[in-house]
Image (cartoon, rainbow, N blue to C red):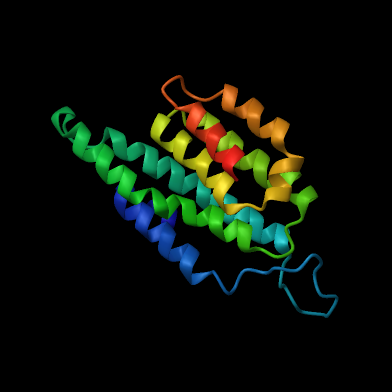
Length: 172
């Protein structure tokens, strides 16, 4: 149902609603229960679901910049800045999963987030998402993945203020 929505703003809010509805339903366990007839899933299933939702929401959010007339560009950018919190809620939800440890974060979570961030080639989205990663995940995760994070900073769009991102990381 969520994939069928063509309008980026409506799709963004629909996917946010989906994330809110599944907040308490997504599994947060490392292994499946061995009982018969249970299809509960694991934390990896939750991570896959949230990352897919994040990727789709990011695409919709970036696509909003191309909606409407060129004379309304400043208004659209302001609207996008106001709506960025909707995309960031996916990262907050990922950070709330208790079974996500440093290995799972390094292998599954961070690599997918950074890939999505770098590939969107939108300065507003890249700067916000990089700062969001810094804010929502624990310091221990950042210390273990500092090289990966900083290498991806080099791949960002030239209009992204990398200095602010590095300062936010240092302040953390």
